[in-house]
Amino acid sequence: MSHQVVQALSDQQTRLLEGGGLVLVLLGAVALLIFWIAALISVLGAPIGCGAKILWLLVVFALPFLGSVLWFVAGRRSAGMY
Image 1 (cartoon, rainbow, N blue to C red):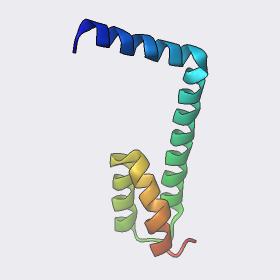
Image 2 (image 1 turned 45 degrees about the vertical axis):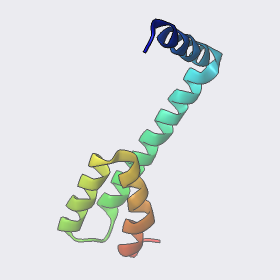
Image 3 (image 1 turned 180 degrees about the vertical axis):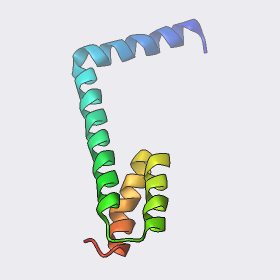
Image 4 (image 1 turned 90 degrees about the vertical axis):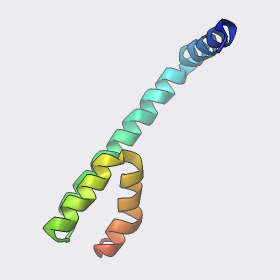
């Protein structure tokens, strides 16, 4: 990349963060963290076997967002938790 392109990207990112973008990024990060923690708590409280819990915990830890979505979409349903 040329120096001008890198500088333009840097200026654009700085303006985004100055214009309240940082608040949005932080809110999004906190929301994702809460979603991830909720998935972990839900897996631990699920009425499934120990092996299945370990597998789901590994999925949620390995793929924080995708694993959480998979748990809430497919895992809870298969565990009988609607």
